[in-house]
Image (tube, rainbow, N blue to C red):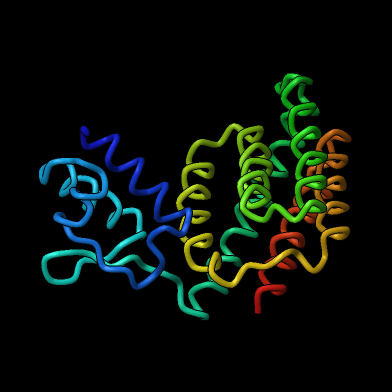
Length: 208
């Protein structure tokens, strides 16, 4: 496997919880798991360390998780960024810069997420929820914010996956998603930003 493929696969495994926080990874163990050579593994581990997903220890690395205070800070940053991207998405919609099909796709994602959550498929719900929020950020047309959110999402998921359970406020989450889409469709950046920020804060509070 080439370095890019090793990096992407190892990142997927970490975010999926196959390697939880505290798990030690070495070139030998990763090589055996992914049938890859040491050079691409070494490069992939360096990139993952730059992403904040692992930290170096001796001859290997350890998967990183946020501590309690760090996690609170991560949610505060995520709330600010998602408020920004929601405002920008509403502005761009009002300016006619977003295709109706793109917003319609987000509505479908939100509806599918509601059904999957109701069915109790937590792993799929996690992926769909991230896809929904990422979709809103994509509408904003701000690649720097999108890249930062992607990196932040990875570390939040790694840090919280082991403690996740079925949402205790599924109806509220669904209503917040619908409200956010409505504010974007209304071209109301103030409402979109407020709803997005409040939604992330509520999610972070629910994990405390």
